[in-house]
Length: 128
Image (cartoon, rainbow, N blue to C red; front, side, top):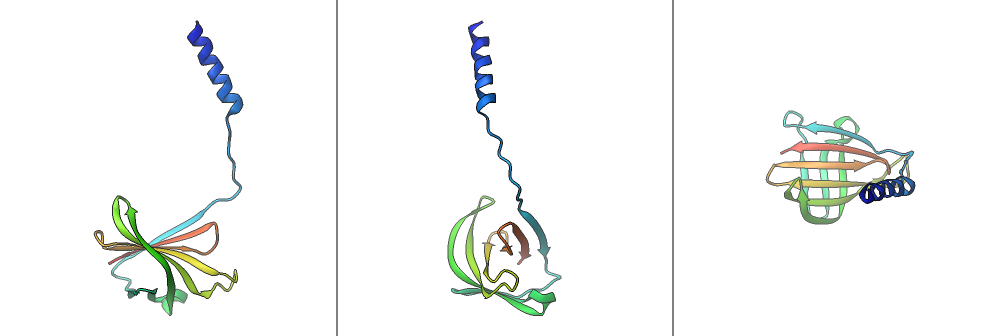
């Protein structure tokens, strides 16, 4: 009988002190895969990453300046993470866009995460 009372009290305590978190914002996530049929030349230097003919319907280069890089796991594989910022300001937000590139040498992929705003994320996976 004591154990039933204790379980009942624990249930009442958890029910009375439980929290429900609500958010009115969400992260809009888009993704696409760029394969070998859609050719994009990617150049990675010590200071910047350049995707040739990537922006504006494949007519303009996308240039990102590397702020820092580090090696850490992505899907259980050590990869190089490049934290970047745009060279030009975004015309709609008057800020520099932030991006992350994840280079997986083993899987021969480069994952590009672009953040057009604080809640939007666009993922692109390049098969190398």
